[in-house]
Image (cartoon, rainbow, N blue to C red):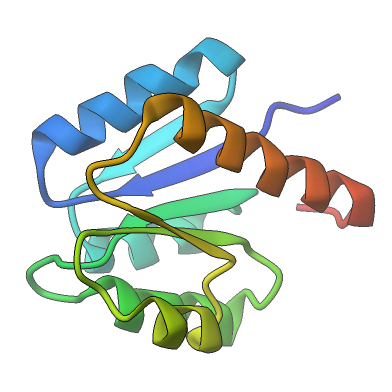
Length: 126
C-alpha cells in the first residue's frame, strides 16, 4: 500500500510545525509550504491524497486556493483550518471539511484519518 501524501499550507511556521508533528506519527508523506502560490506550484509537481490549508493567508487565502485546486483536481480532498472563515462558503466551494482554531490535535488526527479512509473507499488512483 502506498503512503498517503498530504500537503500542509499555512503562513504561520508554528502551525505548520504543529500539523506536521501531529500527523507524521501515521507515516504519511507530508510536504509543507507557507502560502497558496507555493501550494499550487507543489500540486503541479506531485499529487496529494489531502491538502490541509489555513483560511487566512497573505497572497492567496484558503478559499481561493480551494477554488483553484478543485478546478484542476476536483477529487483532491481539502481540509480548511479557520478561526473565522465562512465555513458554509468554504464547503460550497469544494472544501471537504473545516476545523476551527484552536483545534484539538486528536480531533484533527481523527478528521484526517476519516477523510483518507473515505478516499480509500473510492480507490481512485493518485
